[in-house]
Image (cartoon, rainbow, N blue to C red):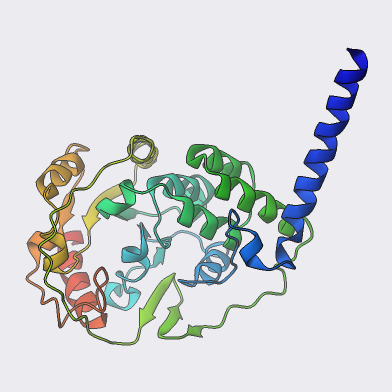
Length: 303
């Protein structure tokens, strides 16, 4: 029996060592061999540039939070007179927002937070956004806490690889270009896209948002964290093409959920009359013409 226990222990140690070596080999092995790791520094959305800049930023007037609707939707040039920073990220869910608030809220010390609350952000698992943050920011206890909340093998593996790269400073020499494809990084966390236009499709499909319990719990925690900090908070649902917005059957339910938090909430799908073909570049995001209209209306609300 003692020999069996000893052999089992040795086998477990051997397995862990081999597992960690395979994780570390991710950077040099063909990516198709690693379906459960998603580590991509500077891959999309200029997250690396944003995370590099935030570490040098303090005491802002307005902090923007949320998904790509945030970092592509709030242009600092339309908030002249305010010092702003955008902590949005692709597919950011409340679980990732929670990490970013705990990591940077005290340092940024904003007077106002504009929290973009795209309904899909509360309806997805957060694996994509967790990998994005792990690969483009530092990794610490908060990263591990985020991984346990996501509880997905891809996030765990990506985090282990992230710790490995951080340990040996393998991202130290990485430089992200200011312009990548159609996107240009603007200081303050914004990404400006070359103007293009969306071609709407007939959308007769009826669907509904399915709010994830763990995302709603994280969102509630974010509300408490911000309110306790004494920061003015505004919730904003950024506009999407009307053909997309109207395809969801429970928009009113989502509005009532946001209004239940007793802070100002604005659904700009109902406040703006935008044209799907003129003001969007895809089925989810405003083009620069639409961003200007959206931001000017938001600024009215802020003032």
